Image 1: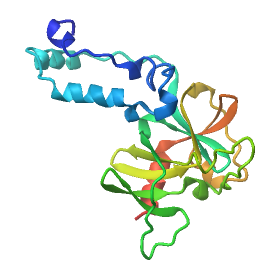
Image 2 (image 1 turned 45 degrees about the vertical axis):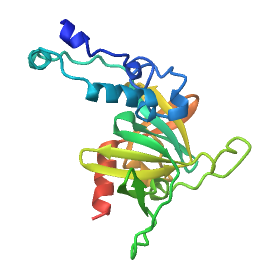
Image 3 (image 1 turned 60 degrees about the vertical axis):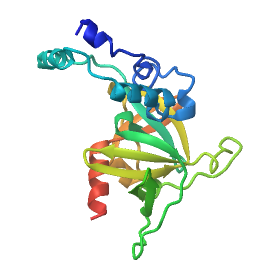
Length: 227
């Protein structure tokens, strides 16, 4: 993969260096919460889509993909940290499509379920909106001097895995952080047995104890509950 044909399409993939796939040191990351929401990322995608494939591009990529891939080194994992009720929670960044401003949640006729909030229009597509906080039995966060931004900082998180996509509201978004999976400890969910079913464990992030969600049972349970 060292020919000039491939090099012609190389650009600054800052998301792999200082974004969610890097060390998360980008000054714009707190503003956009995820690289997918950043104009730089969008512009790079447009450049790539609009560029003509150079001579030899297909052949070289075919040869490259045919090589046996080396295993990735064990390291950190990017997660999105957010506030559910009064509990700091995290979901793997690979399963977070975007973070959006709070939008109108439209109720579904004849469905008065506590967990199912309704549907939300995301870029012209109606996605199911669920309340993870209510599902886990968390209390809604109260406004104090320490969290006076609650209410004004509410966001919608769009999550996706395989063919399943849904939206859930959060009180605050802290941003992308990197955790060490091997350092997760068993979470104490004595008062919240439902949350325990979707837990990978807990870890400290920015001095906060954060509950890391297990995406597999979470997406499966949500899909089954909506049938």
